[in-house]
Length: 279
Ligand SMILES: *[C@@H]1O[C@H](CO)[C@@H](O)[C@H](O)[C@H]1NC(C)=O
Ligand SMILES: *[C@@H]1O[C@H](CO)[C@@H](O)[C@H](O)[C@H]1NC(C)=O
Image (cartoon, rainbow, N blue to C red; front, side, top):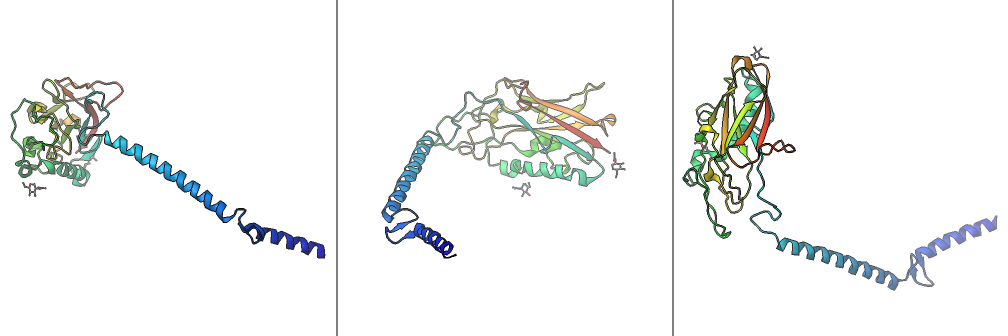
């Protein structure tokens, strides 16, 4: 019995010794100076790592330019996108709640094209690139693109962009690519993908769906803060047979050297969306 108690006592004291041994002055198996050295080692070690990291990061950042992306093997081919921001558009033209989100979306997108705002931009010569040199110290100007250029699709005369009459407007825009100079006369052209007896009628604004050259090249957000990209509005003149069924429509950029038939990238120079209007 006494033996057992002694053993328990022993165990407890050896555990206590492990935490702090008064004879050797060790704390958890090490003396204060040993602990000090270990802490010092890790401090120096991690300090060195942090220093290395910051140095390489700093060197890397020094090689970056403020205005253009560093890694571009060639000027990228732009993608197309539509507004409203949805590739599946569906609504009943008699029920405003069903199309109001599209109308609101178009309205907010067009705020940057506000005529009074665009009055501050340049009136440019059509059909020519608006070249402004490479000097990154000079702020670049931008050409006017007023929403009134979009006529019936501007949302000015018809605040519902044709959605309430079942002839909706879709805005097609080409993504910004710094330094892009499209050759030829780029224009947006749309068509229904399924074969029909009579082709789907559409109206383009500006006329012929032109993306005028004066909006190129783009110099980047920092250098050309007032830039707005050109957009093309497509008003779908749906016929009686087009209601209550889904239409698949493809828009492409044509008439230039821009790629619009890449097999792997469905958005390069083109965009496909579905629309179903009921009445
Ligand atoms: C846009 O223009 C309209 C009238 O032309 C004006 O009432 C509105 O405040 C303008 N919006 C912005 C954001 O400038
Ligand atoms: C669209 O809305 C109208 C009015 O509410 C209704 O009469 C019509 O049946 C709706 N169309 C469809 C296809 O649901």
